[in-house]
Amino acid sequence: MEWLSYLPALSRGALITAGITVSAIAIGAVAAFAAGIARAEGGRVLSMVALCYTELFRGTSLLVQLFWFYYALPLVGISFEPVATGILVLSLHVGAYGSEIVRGALQSVSVQQHEAARALNFGRAQTLIHITLPQALVEMMPAFGNLAIETLKLSSLVSLISIADLTFRAQSIRNLTLDSAGIYSLTLVGYFAMSLVLMLLMRLIERLVRRGAAFPRAAHS
Image (cartoon, rainbow, N blue to C red; front, side):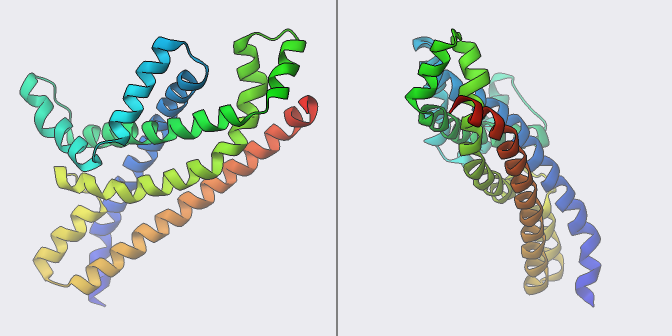
């Protein structure tokens, strides 16, 4: 079949898509925890900085952010390679949305748990590390799984800054062959396959988190 001849190029694009997505999720998770903990547990200054970051990147278009970092920042002497730009912008996006997941989960831990921590003479950091965070992680995981899948789908936007990801390669081949049905069918299958793998991975992580949090929850309930 003629469609099979498209697979090598699309596979190379899929690898780039997967690399950008995984990198953005990993870096974005760090930003999400930093901003979310600052919102929930930090002082006034840290909380305000985290709030500004969160609202800025949640309140503006991801596509405009991508173009701003790639086309506008170089005008003031700051520039990044296309792949670095894509990862950076997607990471900031994940961090902004993820920070609200973290904040909400931390604040959902019952007052009784905090009272138990005070009874054990725990400080704020000890309470966060040993009591609040292990329980909040369980609540975060489903939402983080959805955010990870959404990040994979949004990664297709990096094709607009000349990154040869799956979408870019699909469009390039389509322009050469005019085989829209074949190309975009394979592209849909490619994104769906990557989504399935990512979903299974996030569910595995969720099970591990639940298993790890089972003992702390029983000990402090």
